[in-house]
Length: 493
Image (tube, one colour):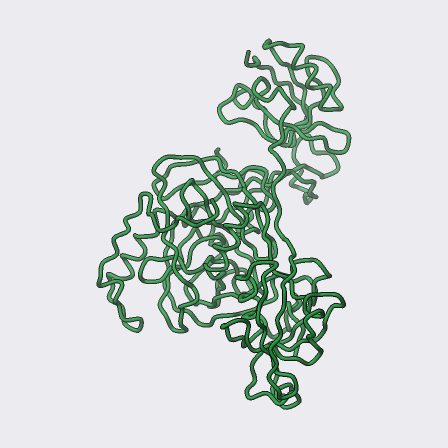
């Protein structure tokens, strides 16, 4: 038996598990160098809701070719390509690759990454993975019909690897979400997304559900979370539909054209697909996404135990009818489980009307409960069945992005936003098509002077912009690509 969530370190004989976002090496070489709480997914918004009867009744073992085609075409319009510009960071560069103006071999680089997503709710809400956008300074979204949008990260949840991104637009297609609880091993599925970045955008592959309820340890950093913290929640679907880096956040769909999972990880020793992929069940992803949209965080019920899967030896020791359930390895003092009378060696086999076979299955059942609600927990205590009434506590997880950086009250005049980093004022974002962008202002540049005045704080820069009063702005910047340069342009009035 092992305490879950299990460690991210896998046994040597097991392939490494890889999150699927594509990260370019550095600079502008990556990506495209240019440049209400209830889900309303079923309304279509540009994707036809008509699914042929032949598709809905397709035999899961030998579906007609038209079933694959119809399912793909039903969902593809709502799939998006996500290009992420990460926050500038200091990286060491090998000798022979030194850039002009980068002394000592160091250069602030703006790495790019890419991934996938799916529009799942009206209003331009996109479901993707946390690891796709967690380092994002800027997010750009491309639709299947080639429209492009700047996107905002609404919120993200590292404990489930789910994030929500939002775009503003008209006639945005919305995917239809299915029910991942009704999936069966052996069922045909398709994986949609953008493997390997821009080269293979909007790709469809097919396979089957190989397993459900997988806990692969990729989100866990240690064996247990501390009191009051939300533990990583893993309850993956396993599939052999080919997915690769860049597929992260893309939908896994059934042959009725409904999204039943969000592709997230692969088992691989090379970083490329080797036959085993993992997707977050859509019922879990949808619940987390709706919490992020409504509250900016995910409220999860808290039981206050460390659990382990049952082994054959456990089944003998505890007089279990089968090798099934979630064994209580530790009960936190003062926790809801402690107050309810849960003990070491108890094996949880049912919560409400939901059977519990594994720890990941128990986590999924708990995730659907509301914090503060009371659940009937059925367990086996050394051969005897006991039912406890447990009032759930609450833990929260999730990260709301910081407000977009701006030059305080002058962003419309300057056309860019800044951050203070280590005593320097650094360009953090530039408005598209603005005079600043056309003149060459770019993220990562350090502002040394503005209108011939030395700049070491945002307040100093704001004062210069106000004094310019819509006139010219002359910047001397330290550019990570070329070193010191001067940029002159006219401020907006």
